[in-house]
Length: 163
View 1 (cartoon, rainbow, N blue to C red):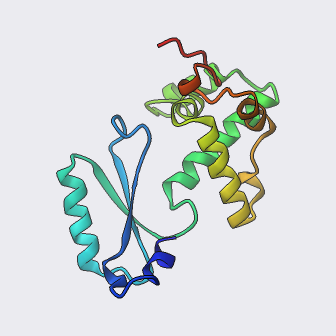
View 2: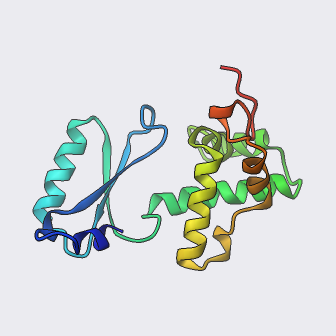
């Protein structure tokens, strides 16, 4: 955590985290993660830096998964459970979020782009750190990763990728 990293330096007030979102070349969001001892001046400098990069910053306090990853991963995991339970196809779940909620990309296509192995690692970490059952990785995610179907980087995940 950022707060843990602060303990290893003589200037903890100058330490914060920058969390860029995948895919970085598409996603404009950057979380600026404030540790327990981060100075306001450090946050201000980070805000200016991120804006110079052409990205859109938000400021969050240090916690497992930060803020937006916890929400995004949770949405993706629930979408996976819905596919697993036969409620709807990956394509229809994604279309529901894209059309009905105006998300630029559905949670399963996004998971394929990020990498299903990455999603599994994040879910496992959050489940262990927070003890929340809703972060327990779904069986379908564990199975796809075990089969080497990691999403776009391997050509197969919830979608077939032929690019």
